[in-house]
Image 1 (cartoon, helix red, strand yellow):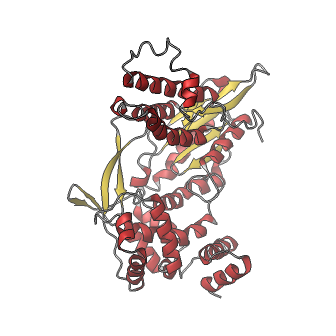
Image 2: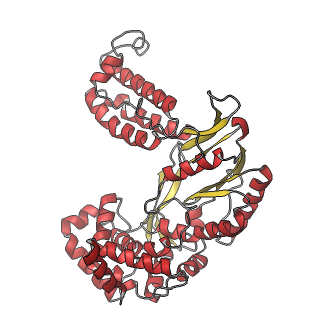
Image 3: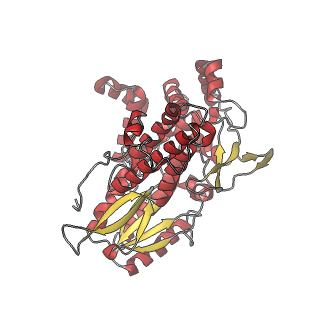
Amino acid sequence: MSAEQSARSISDAEGVDRVRALQRVLYRSAKSDPARRFHALFTHVARSDILWRAWSDVAANRGAPGVDGVSVDDVEDSGVGEFLEALAGELKAKTYRPKPLRRVHIPKSGKPGATRPLGIPSVRDRVVMAAAKIVLEPIFEADFLPASFGFRPRRSAHMAIEAIRVEANRGADWVLDADVSDCFGSIDHDVLMALVAVRVSDRSMLKLIHGWLRAGVLEEGAMSDSVSGTPQGSPISPLLANIALHVLDVEWEKTGRRLGVLIRYADDFVVLCATKARAEEARDRAAAVLAGLGLQLNPDKTRIVRLTKGEQGFDFLGFHHRKVEAWRWPGRFYMQRWPSKRAMASIKDKARQATDRRFVGYSLETAVQRLNPVLRGWGNYFRVGNSARKFSTVDSYVHMRLARLASTKYGLSHRNWARTNRFNLEWLTSLEVYRLTGTVRRGTAHAAR
């Protein structure tokens, strides 16, 4: 029975759509036979239901147009059905060819003036990439290990953060805080294709992936070849990176566990160790494994941190992690987490932009409408852990910024707003500003469960 026939049976029996049913068939087949290589995958990429699912994902993310200048809105205006039908025709006829990436530079979060390069595929390429991801992801998900948390179904940054807390509270007092230099831009193409081929024998699918890797980059009218790395900014790039870095997870499962516990979120990872010597050995072991992928640790940003008695902390996934003495049990230290300095700088910068004096001609309610979604989104991510004090700091800053904007609007001195009772908490409440205070989710304070 083919994968498509099996998917149809599951769809009928379990009441799920056929795209999801196909993914279940592929996952179960890969899980039951770790040595199996899949040979009939490319035809699924051109299926109309998979292309529609892929289009939904691409359209939801919107994104900028690629080198052809065609945007998601343009496709919607001209007709999505016709667009996908033409794309399916190219795939079935084997005439589809990816376009070069459009290179742009976007600001780095929390680093004013700093930028990072991003390659933007065309909308048509993004749809095909998303379709390929739908087909490939369940196969490799069957192999991925618990150490990996990033860009995977039913796994999250919060799960990785909780794993850190649990392991630290079990006695890990040293941490390898690793930084991989330009991971997405440096992965060796030949190595990556060999790793994909471990599970995929379909030549058309392999050729499709290789075409994306070698599509090239267009920047300011000049073309350059892609000799390494994955197409950043594309739907399939995180999956390809996880396939490559799975090598590190496997090596750690085999020989690295005695050194410490690996927790990886895409290309960001830490290793929690019992001693400094083990952390140093973990650094050397990780560097050796990454070298085989064409990657290296950034010597300036990779460090070994001591957690004993709260001596040092480290930043990971936006949170600052540090062992803090328990007020109920003096002498006992437990891992806590709160927004990092960079995360605090980022939300303050967004609040400052939303309340800039150039908006003095608009109503204060308009400023609040700009602020609330930003505050709510930021707060939803950081409300786990021990963020209460940082939340109070952000609330005070937002209060100050709105009061200064109001003072400018009404011709008052900025120095006097805090001394008067005009812009007090009651005034702030009347504006219906989203407040972070009181929204922290309290979990298990110290348990190592």
